[in-house]
Length: 388
Image (cartoon, rainbow, N blue to C red; front, side, top):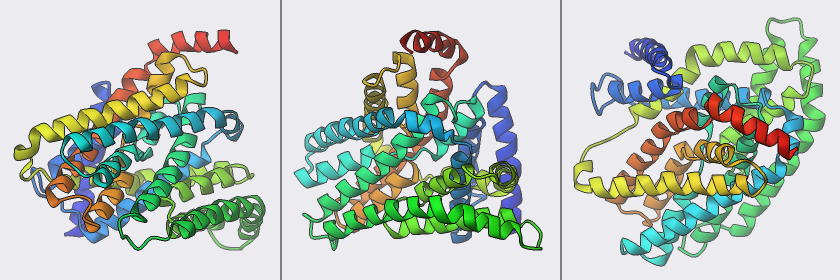
């Protein structure tokens, strides 16, 4: 049955992606929507089994690894200030509005802060594919978005650990901070000294695809180490890609990992996002879902846009950057699960937030398509040249 499900997922995702492109939208939108159709909410042909979940995890890790390989490091360095501003404002605005919404809903102060933190999370795995399709991944905007995603992830996790220390959760804030510092210190050192050495040693082996295997080993080890230290696995995979991208093996590994990723694992990831959708009983909380979805989209869009504008981007470029930060994805799902486990969310609220996260994920590609349109890009490119 699994083999048949994989075949159906691949066929459906490719056809749906093609239809989406023909309709003027990024292919990822079609892949997300067809997942909803295939999943339990509509046809029920594909279920989110443990195996599908693991294959999906590999897919998102490879997707972020590819994004790292294609990152222009020189542009990345130049956008450090902008990334910080976007990352910070992309947390401050949703956190404040989420906290206010929580109080208005009758939640306690701690529960309201938790809701704000959940709405502050960002997962750019969906945005990465859209940026690639629009040819913007290596642009100034793309580099800003990727840098902001790293900052956003670290700050939200640290804030969550700080909050949990007040709720009786078994979390040592000092240890959490120490792990984050250790992660970045070790990962930077390994990227600088070990990665080039390891690739050169593997390249000398008399076996097939040794360099490609070395690239995947580094990717998976970085992802595991990131997850072990409390940083999202996708951040570790992205940094692994950036590290390998600075070596002479970049082009070879990029070409081959794209073949592996986009032929199997990445389509499974995109489709599985839709498959996980559960719409049972949402009618009772429809207005709450609509209200929180609008809040989630607007707060991240506005926060990211203000952060970008403060560092000199024209308004349209700023809004485009903000739109790429809207998707909450798997990061918010993890936070929601923590909230449910520690009784900061009721079961009904948890179900509502799962749908809200799905909504933010589905609306992100068409929003990015609109704001990154060529018409707007030409106008803003002239503005950027005048400001340069």
